[in-house]
Length: 196
Image: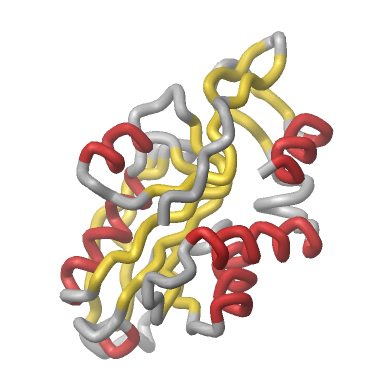
């Protein structure tokens, strides 16, 4: 997605060889027009797969998932990282290790919002080691729902997550894939062609 690549080149900040900060437009301060274009791109890539629900994880994936949900006309559900005291109904739960935070948390989705009748599209902002995505896939499987695929805004291609998920047969669509980060900037992989 050229629009996204250009924005990353312009405003992304590289920290070391593994971290790309895009908090000025994607996951802290948001650029609504860019997020809307991202949602539209995901809707196009996963069109025709019968998606009935979009699943993401709080908090950074919510804006992207919401825009895609608007484009696709389906509800958006997000896995919570903490179970509220008011949440008394049955839940699906899975452990997720955050690469950037270096911690493992249990994520939850109420069983009343995802069922075997659903076809679920998972969306998130980043893919590094694939832990969050694997946790969300586990929630979909626990519910007996069908996985339409996984959409990622920025994939770190130099880390294992994308390769591992594709090897498992997951329909993974990343809008941009970064091959390397460093003092000389950002090197992108060739753009993916939609395979949905």
